[in-house]
Length: 340
Ligand code: AHG
Ligand code: MN
Ligand code: MN
Image 1 (cartoon, rainbow, N blue to C red):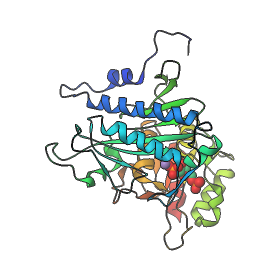
Image 2 (image 1 turned 135 degrees about the vertical axis):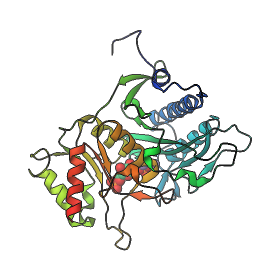
Image 3 (image 1 turned 90 degrees about the vertical axis):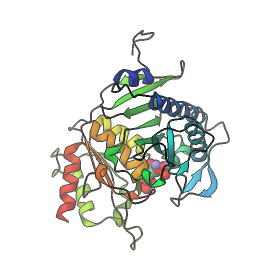
Image 4 (image 1 turned 60 degrees about the vertical axis):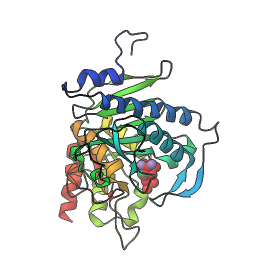
């Protein structure tokens, strides 16, 4: 980007320019995004200085997912809850780190939006200075705003999301979001403290030849999953040539690469627990928001048996297998799984 350009667009300006003009618009959605951005800037500040502050390592606690809570998980979670409960735009929130939905304290103003988030994705990477992120999903309540919201209103299928996106805390901090009108990426310019449009209209190329999976789980995979990965390494795949492997282990980072370079990211079902085979990733705070972005970018997202965005969640912390990326690669994986 040209230094000192007078034509740079901030994310809030972009939102105001592109959102559907409605006479009923209250400005609450813009406020919600503004507060999310402020929370992300605060998280960026701590992530950037992680080695210098006392924020590395675990808290000694295990969260509802059965995973070790990192100090930065807890910090990011608290920052998001504190900022967003004051936005006036929300009636309900849910976080990967909280077992139950989070209600808005009665003394604070409310709105009609519901926010679900993964405060710090990839947090096992933070101690070794590898990219982490924050993922968010925004829905609208279905019931009238005059009544108390039912926590089950969180359980909406992904196609009903009003907006979704993520912040990537990498060499630079980025925000990528969609309100259903394409996917747009912004880079934080730390010198002015603003996210500036750097990646308008992002689309997933169909020609990428990268597969991304934790192959250390091979021993726990079923036959079709093994076949899919073998095919990506050989010639019988959509590109008709062996793919490269890339795997960061931070979903936001792996997705961000897939969004720009194409190919496929997968976290398939595995049999680590033979009594309860399952996918690892969370439907509401990970798979669904990224599926919304993937489809908006011309790609696809599947559980292996169907479109992620059509799954009606049964519970807040439901997990799901995920195949996400270029349409051809996702369709290829689905076809293999159908064959069994
Ligand atoms: P989180 O840090 O929010 O718990 O998410 C971790 C997730 C995701 O970021 C990543 O794709 C996946 O876990 C990696 O899992 P493996 O270590 O099993 O590969
Ligand atoms: Mn995560
Ligand atoms: Mn997390």
